[in-house]
Structure formats: structure tokens, C-alpha cells
Image (cartoon, rainbow over the protein chains, first blue to last red):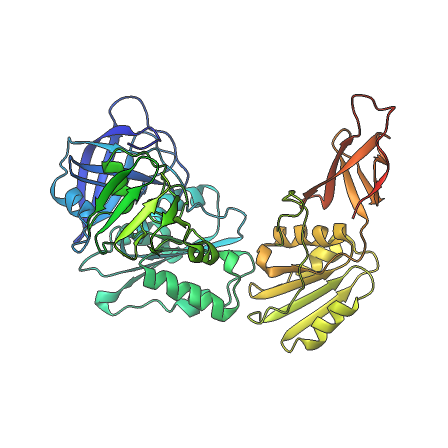
Length: 317
Length: 173
């Protein structure tokens, strides 16, 4: 179980907001939900018994509204099952367990201007930014890239609500965002935010580097969680327990399935909460938390996304 | 900015050698009084759009003015005493510069500004500890806890249990 208290919520509405995206409205079984800050996410626990998933989803509802949370889930057919479960198994009236909100993608409020790049379902954290930025009268522009045959939720509403501050680029209509043109000539104090696939994050970071925009002005959130890999065995030296980690299970999930309590927040290799000490075995590092030197030392790993490079790992747990 | 841990204290700034930022499209060099050799050498090597300013005694208005047209793709280089470096860095932060856009040369003197936690006065030109507060007169123990906002080191009444028994005077660097 998670070391952070989970809360139970009821699914009160499910809406197909794009061909591949469903939006879920979650309400508390009793009382009120805790307020959250723009850019926060929750970890949703799904499934029962052997087949359990925990995926992080950005809260896209208004942060000032503590009656309900909303999340959006893109169906990832090649994924390890969490999004398929949400799309196929979860119905209105069902109860789900979620973590309290945590935020690893808050706006830099000192910025003079905010430029938001969303790719597909990566629009979700920005939906919670928008009402707060409007309330604070912050200057911002949203560049929303999607494929209307798959994603593109809320593009009409955003365009209507934000006018020129929202630019939509539908790749299925041949519309592309010229990232360099957007980033060039922005005023001092502009900060840039990216949520979307890795390719979009890389493209924006590379453009910033080329233009001479400081790295400190670039913020991103990857929505990709653990990706499958080769199966391996893990030995826990303190308890003597040995576990098998299947190809489509993350090490963190395997530990949790064995009732081993590991702190976590993002489950995406970003926050650093779940770091584990490794005493034996080669690691395939997939996180963006550990420094290059720490990765090379081979003494620590992030079990939420990283795996064994060989057949076996020994953890100091 | 430079925040390596020194002597177990995380907040005392560490000044590493400054290089030109090869990615920047504009470079601004500001010196507190005379332009030191290191800053001049960076300026001379800079091939890009550049400007240099040296202030005998810069007012806040002058410093802010120099940042008005500063671009998002620029880098700022500062030379002078430690309080000056961080005063300008504070203005730069207010103007919207990221910390990686501001490069500080090692301070030209080891004199510290001291922030008194009792009366909040900042005492200038401090080179040893304990040191009399220019505000309340308390003999202050000088620490290595540095405030980037105030450009000053935190200090408190030395040997508060018995302030008639002062610790031996020591140089701070």
C-alpha cells in the first residue's frame, strides 16, 4: 500500500471528449476534496488482485473547485493496461482509490509571461493552469497540437474561451506548430511549459537551446509512465525475499504487489520519492531524476520506471 | 547559480570561473566600480552583440534601467563586491532573468554585509567575528548562512548566555 493515505472517490460522469480520450469526473464519498494547485496530479489505483495498476493523471478541473476532480485518460493500446482498464472497465457509479494531489509541474509564478505547449492529452495540466492564470491576470498563450482523429479534446471550448491566446494545430488537417517561430522574440521573463510526448518535449528543449533561451525557463512534464521491458528477478537483501518482475510490470508495482511499502509521488521517474539502493546487478536507468554520475555509479535506481539491464538485481530493502 | 556545499554550509555561495555563454545572443557586463581584468577579458573575447557598464556607485534606478531592454536570450556578467553582485542579481530576478542567465565573478573583496537577526540592520564591511552591529550595537557572531535576497550573512548575538564573555576574535573569509 501507499505510504500516503489514499482517498476513495466515486466516478460520477464519464465523457468521450475525443476519439481516444475519456474524461472522468470524480467526487468524494463524503465531505470535500482537498484543493490543489495548478499542474497537480493524482495517482489512480485500478484493478483488483494480481492485475493492479497505478497511473498518475493530471487534474484538469478548476483548482478552486473542491467538489470534484476531473482527469482525462488517453487510450494507449500498446500500454501495459491502465488506460485500457479505465476505458473498458470503469463505469459511472464505480469507486476508485486515488492519492491526494501532488504537484511537480506548477507554473513559475514569477514569470512575466507563460507560453504553454500541449501535445494531445498533454492539454490536461494546462486546463487547470488556465482558470488560475486568468484569475491572476497573468499573460499567457497556449499552443495546442493534436490529431483530431485521436485527440484534440476541448479545442473548440478553449478557442472560444481564450480567443487569440489559444492556437490549435490539428495534424490530421495538416496544421503544424512552428515551434521556433513561437519561441523566438518572446520577451524577457517568458517561461515555457511542455506537456506531451517525449518528441515534443525534445523539440521545444532543442529549439530553446538553439535560440539561446535559458534552460531555467523551460518546464516540462512527461505523461509517460513505466514502459515494458525484459522480465527479471529481484532479490531484497534485508528480507531475503525474491520477486519476479514480469515484462509488463514495473519494479515498483512488483514491490507493491508483495506488500512492500515504497514512497512514491509521480511514478514517472521525475520526483525521486521511490529511490532504492542497489547492491548488485546492472541497471537500465529510464528516469530523469538521478544525475548522470549517480546513474553511472549503479548504486541507486528509480523502481517506478527503471529496470534491470540483466536478469537479476539485488536491492537493499 | 553557484550553490555548492562548502564546510557543511549550503548557503555560502561558491564562485566558479566564469565563461562566456556561447548560446547567448546578447551579453551585458556590469562592474561595480572599475572593470576588473577578468571581466574585461570576457568582454574582449565576446564576438556577439554586447554592452559593458561600470558604475562608480550604482543607484537602483540605474541598475534597473540597464536591464530594461535585456533580451530573453541574453546573459548578464557581474563583477564587484559580494553585496553588489547579489543586489544586481536580485534586480535581474525581478526583471525576469533566470538564474542561469546571470554569471557572477568571484567578489573583489572578502568584506561581508551582515544581517542582524535582532534589529534587522545590515552592517557593512565586516571581516571578522564577533562584530558590533551598526544598528543595535550587539556583538554579532558571523555565520556562513547567506541570503541571496539581502546579499548578507546571517548573524546573531555572540555567546547569548553570557554576552560579557566574548569568543576570541576570528577572521572570516
